[in-house]
Image (cartoon, rainbow, N blue to C red; front, side):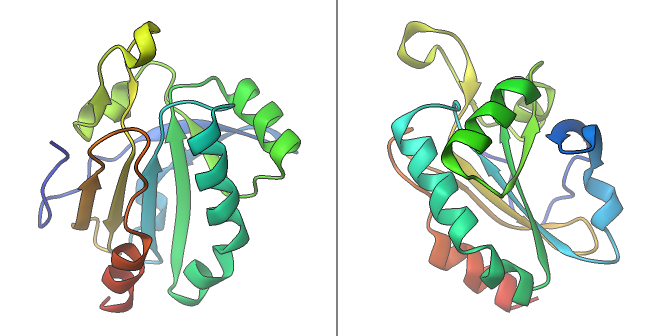
Length: 158
C-alpha cells in the first residue's frame, strides 16, 4: 500500500542523467515553488512503461499549466534510463532509485517482478508545495496505468 494522503512526502535526492551529466534532483527543492507528481514505474525498456512515459512526455504541457514538476522513478540505473529516453524520445525527467530507498520509503515495492527481482510498483503521487501528499495511487498490477485524470484533478485543486 502506498503512503497515505495528508502525510508528509519523504524527501529524497536521486540521480538523473541529463545532457549536462549526472544531476541530483531533490524533492524538497520544489517545496514552496511547485507541486510535484511522482510516477513510479517498474522497468525501462518494457512495453507498458514505454507507453506510459511516452504518453506522459507528450502531455507535459498540461502539468506545466498546473504548476507541477513531473518525475518518473524506477530502479534502473540513470545510464539505462538515458538510453531508453533517447531511444523512445521520453522527455519526462527520469530519476534512478537503483538502491530502492525511495521506492521503499513510499511503500511501493513490487516483489520479484517476473522473477527478476524487486522493482518499483506502478504508482502515482501528487505532492503539494508544502510537501504534503494529496493524492496516492498504486495500480493493481504493473500492467495497469495510474488514473491520470485523477492526478490532474488533484493538481487542479491546489
